[in-house]
Length: 54
Image 1 (cartoon, helix red, strand yellow):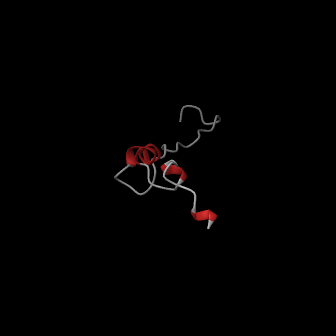
Image 2 (cartoon, rainbow, N blue to C red):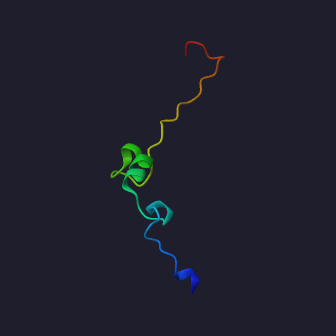
């Protein structure tokens, strides 16, 4: 019964595993509310140094 005696009212929501809109918005970037996938930078193809001016 000791495990049920401690209070969770003083703990932060992220320690309890609860939703935090500010953190989720930061993680999702501009895709927040638009997509289920977070925003990722566009991958650019690396250019070979041997192919000059192409």
